[in-house]
Length: 252
Ligand code: NDP
Ligand code: 8X3
Image (cartoon, rainbow, N blue to C red; front, side, top):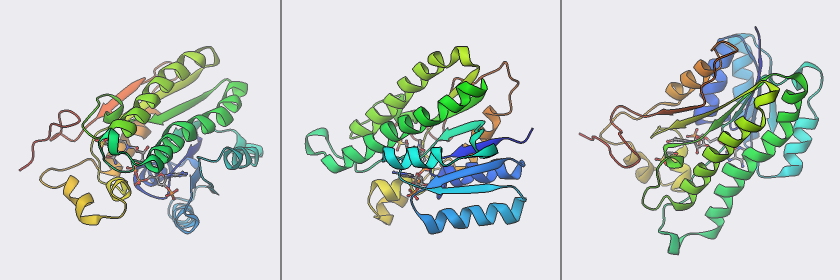
């Protein structure tokens, strides 16, 4: 069955790879992000390569009015969102708590927690009305274990962990699946964003081992949507083989 899949943060990294994976499998997509040129490029590329329908919606998940306008603009079959992938997110900075940069904190909490909530609040009622749907939240190993200097990023992903569990309970009687995917280290734009464009520092994170790729994560996100109606993956942690915990890596 052809689904309509809404993926936030599809201009780069996991979201872009997740969009490609669903398009490869013939599903129609609503993709979002703030960088309009990149977003339109991704849409154009998927339409021409896979002959699927793609609707790009350019907005900032931190802004409730933009989220409301985007979701309220969906009409006809575009409104029938079968899968919502709450992927948009970031880490900003890596400082001890007493030296934390307040603006970094606001960006992480506003995007990773409030943005995910805004999207869920707008899309879940559509799923409830249809008595079907699947919400997939992008968590992290950082939402499973606290690590040094991770403080607010870890807190935001612990929030995703808790929100995901509670969302599953709230939507249980509405036949809606709710899944958290919690990856370990993956080489995307993530570290470049965390270190504010310092490419050497970002590249250094992935030296000496093979990190997850965006495609590895996309394969897993797609997989959890392929299970029979009565089967749900609640929570899935995936790591590079060379990573055993948030801080234990085997580097050569
Ligand atoms: P990238 O930086 O490569 O991609 C992040 C995506 O999120 C971009 O498309 C970006 O689009 C979008 N985004 C960020 N802020 C906003 C916003 N305010 N509004 C709308 N879109 C936004 O990172 P990843 O792909 O690695 O990260 C995706 C998710 O996975 C995040 O939630 C991250 O926390 C999580 N994660 C990442 C891991 C990793 O090691 N890479 C591991 C575990 C979890 P644009 O800039 O165009 O708005
Ligand atoms: C991203 C992985 O370990 O940098 O969520 O927090 S980590």
